[in-house]
Length: 185
Ligand code: ADP
Image 1 (cartoon, rainbow, N blue to C red):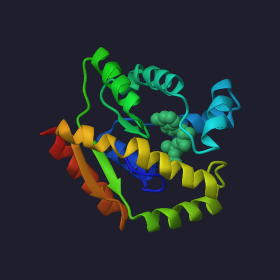
Image 2: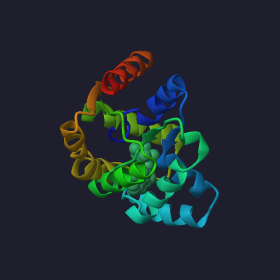
Image 3: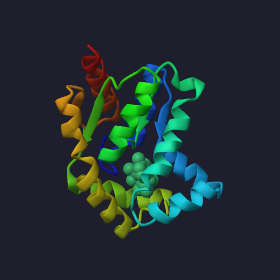
């Protein structure tokens, strides 16, 4: 977990590689579909360009299909999902069907000011169609309203840890790996 610009995608790739499991990013899957101009991509774009969440039925069934693929059988890392309370419920159901459960939920913490700086820089470098000032503002608001509260639910299950997301990339990766290891014990 972590707000836009917290480094989730960067750390997800590094942590997944260290654990030899796939990193599954709903944002990346949507972006690949947008790029390929698929039906799913056109639908996703109409929401993501406004900084809104793609409807749960669409996102949930996409995650369900992805988690059924062979490479997820030995474990996986989810980046950008679940993002609201309904997705938490659906993820629990999907995992129960596979006879597995989440080992841990790691939340990357970065000060709001630094987030905004990073996102402004990313907008210049990557030119993502949703990184407009309005899109960024809306995504941060949606994160605070709908996603941040999920940390509490996972903390109550004893599977949530916070990691500082500023500073050296390697140090952050090590801290995430340590948090995952301690949550698994
Ligand atoms: P960011 O880099 O801003 O954190 P992502 O790359 O994770 O954003 O996602 C980009 C967009 O894809 C989101 O703004 C949203 O529209 C859509 N999206 C990604 N994950 C989800 C999700 N779990 N539920 C609904 N929409 C999602």
